[in-house]
Image (cartoon, rainbow, N blue to C red; front, side, top):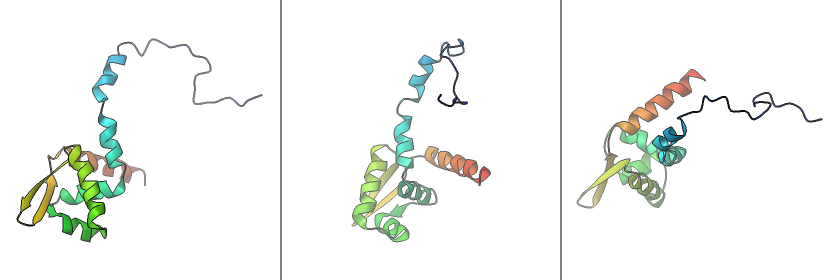
Length: 117
């Protein structure tokens, strides 16, 4: 006989507590894309570095000890989600955060992580 699963209901019988919540799910549509991007440690590090100041691509590559093409790939994804923006100054390209929202998200995650260490 299979062992009971203690973290699931024994029978499927909705209690009615879910009423009106189906429409709420629409409010988080698309958020998973941001979390997927943040799920990569390199991209999270790039965003964290940019929370301190604007950096050129070469500086980011140096700090993270990575190649320019690898950094460029990550920045392209971050730019596609409008998490970073760039400006060209002669031969140099500088990146910065598009806004401060992502910093708040990272800081919240840091606080949560620190609580459970």
